[in-house]
Image 1 (cartoon, one colour):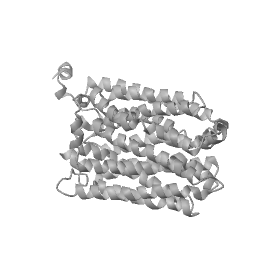
Image 2 (spheres, rainbow, N blue to C red):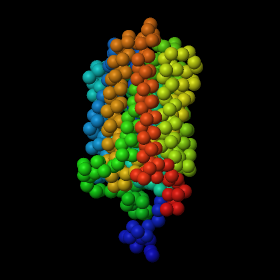
Image 3 (cartoon, rainbow, N blue to C red):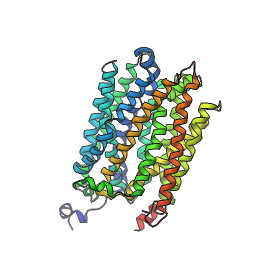
Image 4 (spheres, helix red, strand yellow):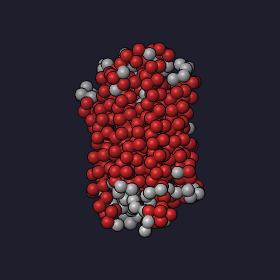
Length: 435
């Protein structure tokens, strides 16, 4: 059949080459890198916001929480938008919102304006993650899916690592609260650049390959949400408690290290970045491992178990901070590498954007609530360099979340090893390819 005929008949088009798929992954991951940098730019300047703008711990918690608050509603809508208009348009729209939010955050020193910027950024950022996650599933489902998710997260978390270490590589900027936020605006442009490059490559693929026709514009019906099944909801529950134990901790971690363990800002940022460095390299490795052996619920149980002791180690002992941060790094590498791809095996492709949107929506309820709760707990307990014991209430909150993670992962494994399982414990990349 001629090339012209192949263009008219998508059924005879070849699949994209492996190289083409990985180039596409690189571009959408570039957008994620910018997204993650902007999200994590607040923690390194927390003490500057206190000293120069007279913000309280609750104010700092608000700057992170307000990012999540609109996503209690918006991210589900964002997932439906992804299913409705396709990944490339959604990634561009949400990436543009990320850049606008970063610019607004640095526009004024008043809490109201900065919080408004974080709100606009949040409107785009979580929906961008949903769109990118859906795109990865679209291009890699039935192939190296968990590994591709791992690579995507590795590149994205390079943004986090750069933000956490910015007190070192951009040290002169930290004389003022504003300069680090201007750097964040520069990284925010990557959200748009990556979106444009992905758009170009997907349009090109529509004329050459069959995979590009897999996007769905089916109408999303709300009652479909009720049909996602119990395994899906166990994963959602694990998602809430796991991320609520990680990201609100990161919000206050550098300040906690400085006050309770007498580190410098540079060392505090480096310690938090250890967590990110583990995920950058560990997530693809664990993703490849999960593709090879299955056992996804079991792996999530193990990752959750690691979280339980780490916060109490930091709150009550003088053990080297490298030990609990390394344990957290393993957990933060393992669980996302397995959790997000697992949804693609449980929910059908046309509803995948909605499923990821709903999952992220509920996750953001936890992030908003626990950022506010821990900020309140620190203020209530008078947590400071003069009273480092005040941080212990927050450490207990995080440890309890680790226990709940083990519980939900156990329930997921119990479900998936029974008659209603979806193959999370048995499906491997080799078996999926054979099927």
